[in-house]
Image (cartoon, rainbow, N blue to C red):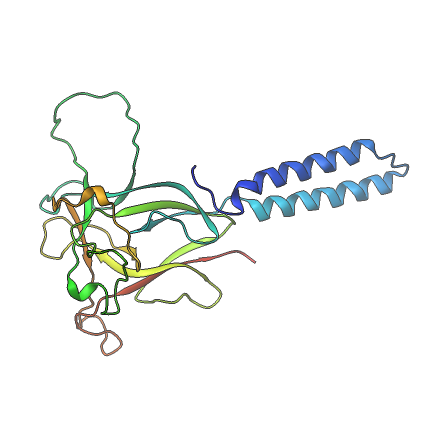
Length: 248
């Protein structure tokens, strides 16, 4: 795990120190009464449970389009978005966050005619970037044709993580991790890929600007008909948000 957040690196250290302090005092204090000793042990056990619950590891989620993890989470690893070639009919149907620095196992040279995984590139157009209320970027050029970065993040507390399509704000009682737009493979491409929520402020992997296609992500638009309109609208880019909620 690399580049932890502000609180996570100290979580287990705090837990261990707390446990050692309690064990030390339990061993050194001369508690005459068995009642007092039992009460002390009970309080110590409750404190340890509280500390463990507070600093317990939370769920893991992927932040697409950004290699940093949001507040209240820390980064497990950063990577590059990978997927199936848009022209292939076979293979997998999901995107993966591939580590930037892979480690290899036993290898056999040459193609084995199995599955292939490619880098994923943004397919954006002028209407999808600065000045039009969609993606916001400070890059000199739009992210179009650049490789997509990603980060696998872990929430610092026990929680449930949920991606809400069609909403840019979380349900009351839930905390916003990040917001963006729903994206997937283009509808007339052969490859069928899952929907992902791509960060509204997309980053790019600069080494990947070669327009080599492979896997691509495009904005997802709503279509009236089986979707109720005017609640939905024809050909409107669908927003999304990723939210978390800690148990009470």
